[in-house]
Image (cartoon, rainbow, N blue to C red; front, side):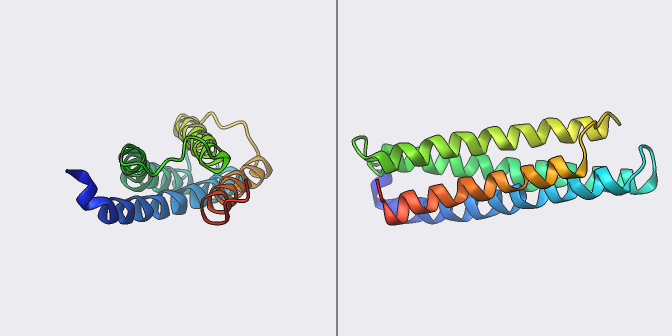
Length: 146
């Protein structure tokens, strides 16, 4: 039944991944500025907390869920090549991306509680994690070098 909608499911998956990735790229940058510029309890601290919470709750969490549901549906429709290394590289990177999302969610809660102990440098370095994972995923799916 869903096979007739394969292209639509794939389009929804791609759109959800784009939205999710936008948040994964932006949230660590917010953390950098929050850690470096805002004193706990200040008006700027409160502004960053609202921005971070809404980015996670309104954009990133729904986008991640839709990306996973659409992706698993595509797998169910035969889009996963169980014998190809590229498929496993992609799924491992997606799991790591989900872990990065969770790590950022925990960091947001620390900021909200006034308990951030990490520097802007930590968040700058972490900002590269989603980029590297995205590179592996796109190369694995499009180029299929392995």
